[in-house]
Length: 458
Image (cartoon, rainbow, N blue to C red; front, side, top):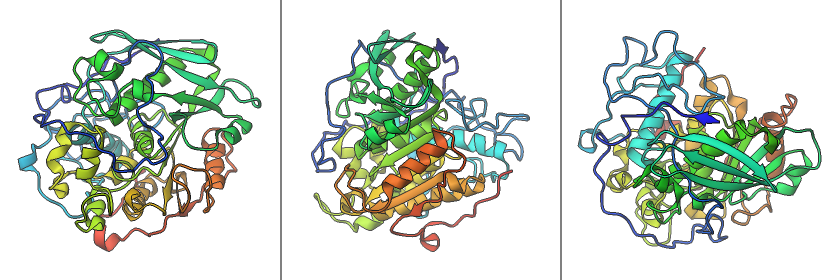
């Protein structure tokens, strides 16, 4: 059984920005393959949302420490929320934010303190998490959750209690025919879009996470996330992240599932790639994150998307923040105010990607679809790589761009080899596996997008 006692007053109401008019959804063709569409809900009754631990909406982060308390938590892996004890200042309202054309500096705390130690980065990681939830997604955690699990007939049932309603949902587990239990596992949103048969041959179990039952992407008030927390203002991506965290909770307390909760990966493609990145960023128990063709709202930087789109409208060009927001309810309504003011966002998605560091991360792009924002993701990925390098983990982030079918496995750029290398290193614990894979189409244009330097964090 898992109990999550820490919750954020910072995120639960008084400081959240006012809700705006709910957006409608439109079909702009991002997910031509149909992956991640509104399918049937997860089995079981209902699910809930809870995730990042809580901070108080207080100012003052400690002299010269960027908010890191003496002897503070320096762990970045193996726990759901790093920096749970780090104080986080109140976040500025929209009118108080200053425009910044560059990708924001991930190594400057909200109080202006420069990050120079690993302990400070833990607190900065927490700050970035709070900013993502405050300005983009809505809160991952609202109410306390007690989680239990049971397994039968190849299904793990996750029971979540303590909220407005007790809820439950189930995931399918397909065990490999090789290896020894407990097995490492890949959690796939709607099963994922990788070659699952090959992964099972390598000794990796597959967990099919039917996330739309947690929250349908077109309805913030639907699904078990909203039932557990009461009326939910959070978008689908953070709700899916909450559901994935509850799966991990259940795996930790259900050894009969034969899954090793310390060797888990998450993946998804297109809109599910956005979800996979959000899940990997928001739960540091996940060893490996593989977002595939995630586009804007995923790996791609909002600022770069805006510039690369060159003002085009309709279904042409690159998906921007305003187009992402209007397609589906992936984000909370608070993000809408940045639709015509992207440079006022105090963060960008190179920092969301950087939250995965120093854990394993393999980014897969697709050159055949302009809408998917190749250069935008390349720039964000390159800036995030600087975070990995600062943490001494440059080999833990990989990137492959090539042209192929959307969410298909007809790879042309070595994707399968890269996937297997990352799986060997982070799930099968093969230290000899080489993850020196960096093949984006476009190199990071530091002169255009980066006006900061990355420290070496001891």
